[in-house]
Image 1 (tube, rainbow, N blue to C red):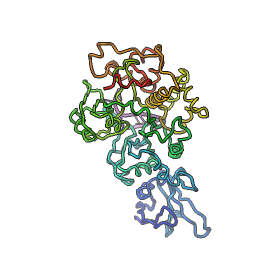
Image 2: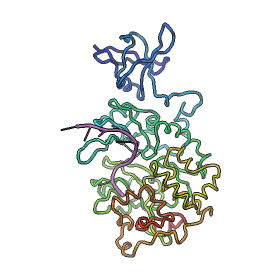
Image 3: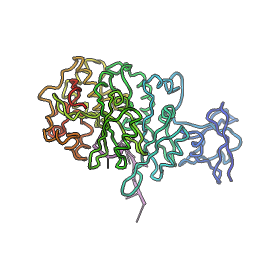
Length: 445
DNA sequence: GTTGAGCGTT
């Protein structure tokens, strides 16, 4: 029969009574329902004064010597959550408060049970704060879950708390991180600290940066953002009117462009670059879909050809490869080293556990360094070719019109580098070029 | 009906 067991987060805390199963065992999920992130239990053995662990297999906790008795059981959390001394993890919020930007972003939930649904996600994560997005990604044909999903909190504090712990959802441990951050759970907690301390690591002062999805873009590069933004991850049911209506709350929308046939992205143009800039890097939820706003690449440039700005950033080996390629190409990598001779930029990126050196950031940093005279602009030999006149007349954006889904996906990890001095035919066709040289007055609209 | 590292139809 069900009995109620006294469980507390700490010996000093007031216990909560938690119901056992019919057979007298206690499910970890039941514990985690009251103590999100819990991974086990222990109690103080009155005869020895020592703490004793509770046996657990497959998420089921067994009473010591067959009976729960009247002990107050203490919840055990993963070691990574242990709070001790003056470590930053003692109070992650205190450290993250020094970040410029505390907006919520979409979070990826990894390791979901196949059976978990949007409702399960919402129910579970609502314990930590108001959930404004819960998605399980599925195979479109079979509807089968891919085992991951996305959530978004309304409150940044809930987001930080959520990311600082693991989650037992329907019997599996799941991790929550910033999408594409390449964080493991182990690096993630460190990450909070490192971001806070990153002034020492970054080649530009962190106070001059804004945080966009944990990506840092130097202030000087922000002016390269035009009045037009690129809206990624659109779904087919989002109309131009939907976009116009939605984004009008931020400023006057002067144009909306949705490529046809459907390409899962759109362009929204404001009458103010300031408004456009303020939206870059943000996720927005339109008709239940999370779209991502990023800079619209210039469709052509008088000097350097069309440019690509955003890609998904280096993932795993991708970012490594990107940097190596950068080193081969020399200019920017060497400049960065000159600026910060003590730090290997690749190590910085790795230690921060984030997409610091993704293409958009590199382009932005490169633009700043170029404007400071630290590195030369790309040479004529390194230019991507101009789009043809025919492509100009086609309107929209010449680069995207020339890409198939597959080829653009293949390019996505290294888009920037391909434009930066690559003579590779694919990139030439892609029309990628860097933003460096500050040609924002030409080609931007 | 299987699976278990990843990353949202640019």
